[in-house]
Length: 208
Image 1 (cartoon, rainbow, N blue to C red):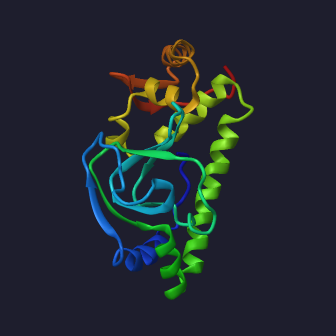
Image 2 (image 1 turned 45 degrees about the vertical axis):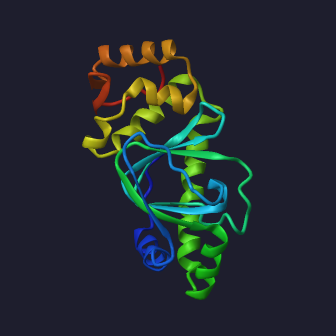
């Protein structure tokens, strides 16, 4: 997902209280996250370590890869999530989960409304930025925005992710179009790639 500063202080305040109530989990890279006793869209899931990919269920579209720390479903008990989602670990992950209705109880009990508001505002800005990048823009601008976002990742993580596959899953642009644009950018020395991974960006033209 696009990079914006996470409200980390607020996250750690929420984490300190919610972690006392949650059920722990760990995932190996490539594993899909499952909850044994409730649906994913009725739970609050906190990833303390690792990176995870978010997909909409029964759809090839990927919402993005999120690096920890991150909270999913913080407000699910207030505003029901109707869509179903799938979380797949990109790296080894650790965290915990709890039913969304319990999250709401603890937010009230410990008066964590300010922290919850900050976290939800950050998520809204992330989705807003994603929409600005992908909706109503041409293929090149979608690819350009995705490349710039990938450069915001730390280098070790970026070298795990194939550029073409990631762009295709995030934008649904055909692989041939993506490959053509990436090839042109490489030939123009605008980007550097090794073994399909993004190594660096010199600069990216505003238009293709």
